Length: 392
Image: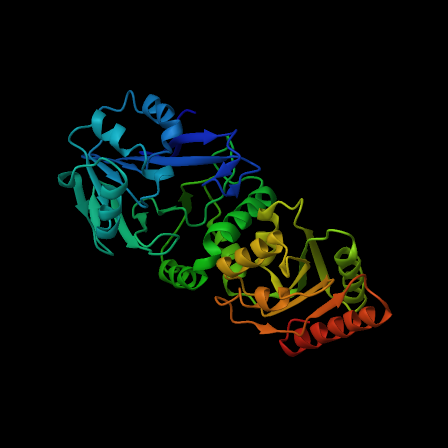
């Protein structure tokens, strides 16, 4: 990947990781990803904004082979997909200093072999003059680690946001030209990584709203030369009410739960509710996370395994609680034979969420006529709650 010029003296470098399919041994990457670094060359000083994952370090170093000097490495975030190649850059540019928040300095020393005397720490609002190009540092903790910051390039009106507003999307294009594709990738990224920090993100959106921004340059995915596209998307995901959507993550072993899910889905659709069922045995968990961004209600559907919920349902409940979506209502449906504690165990897993629990429908064996009536009543109750919440 060759350097891509954004503005005179400002280039995007880094690496596109086309083939990567899993991040942190946890997050699916159906479209690969990129690790964006940026070179800002002033009249007097040169700054490298972030580096790349060590797996692609050789690409970055090839891009830097003709760069005669780097005075500063701006480390927005200590996670290794951005910081991991800092030691290699410091080895090549021995006079360079690492610029970061005080907390990031501690993290970077813990994570990487960087001597303490290599650091310059900056406070919120501090600036660094490169000679005709001024970097202004904006502390932005919890997007998505506590040490993070943004950089605003004053003269060129570029906001470098590291993980914030990014997308796991491998692309050879500089800008987000296919906005439909980028929207989905950015939403998946928000859902899986940023959504647990929604309250912090709301504050950071407010903090940057008065900046004159022409370009947003994140450290994953394409650059935005239409900043309002991604800012408006984040405002919707963070600030808007949840929508008239019910998610039904389910597991079925012998067909009882699947029959209940199919019946409840039809009952809700008849009453004007959008329903999204997810068979947890085959679901891309990232798709489920994306759906959580908008949903008002989650109905966990599980059979009984050793008197408790199925492990896949436990994972879905754990994930829902960890991601802290805007969900307002939760219920549980499922079946058992000789006994079950599944409802109690599942409902105890949502301590992070400010939700109302709608009474469960947990039945013995295969659903019978009275059980379908109970599912109709559950559908009616969900509709009632949605109307009371002003989302239907």
